Length: 196
Length: 139
Image (cartoon, rainbow over all chains, first blue to last red; front, side, top):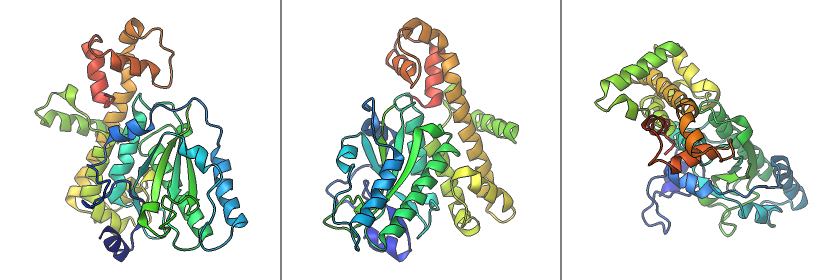
């Protein structure tokens, strides 16, 4: 139901960790600041992946395994999976990096969490993912602009120190559910704690 | 402009029955007011503006003669609410300095370490410091 209504309004959605549907097995209550804090705190001291490496890995993946959809797991994915992280849904205009007003609150919650002493001073990747519909290179570029838009809002409107956040777009190169590449569960924003 | 924002924030606090010390709202609650009151106007007049870099704030200001009265009231109020929370957060280290020296002296400064120590020591830290932490939304 969610996907139909979203598609009909031309809404592009970055993912669903929170599902509105009551039938969803992971139906949750409203997203809270503490949920974000609890999922992100307790970083390891050192993470050796840089944002540039991650961007490069995604671009290389498209060159190395061309085709409509990625067939291989992104190198670094296993490393990333070990880190403290949280998935969020942020809605954007179709084919655009403009955050819709309906998602302002979500961005504000990230800001609320990042400003607390529990997460202060730690660094995070803001990673944008799309589903597998459309061109891979286009999706990669769009997800980067969307991740940039979230980072921009956090560091300007909400004054999170810029050095704490690096925006990375991974397009459709790291699907959440590779068995359903076009599913909306793949559209998401991931916050990943990369330590101090 | 900034002065005005602070005055308005003070006004909002004064109107409420809750003591001033228990006020200030989180960033999410503040920006949600903007989305609710101005969402329609934003989607009509600010189709190119994004949330970052004050693009929305500037766009609403430029279109203040066209946007709804509620949006005009709340766009200013939300700016004040955000500012109040920034000020409250920035004030914590100083307002809790004595408590930090007393209870968290051995904790390495930086990365929120000392404030996390102060949060754990809630039962013994001063009222002034605990109030500052509440006001900052750090609990």
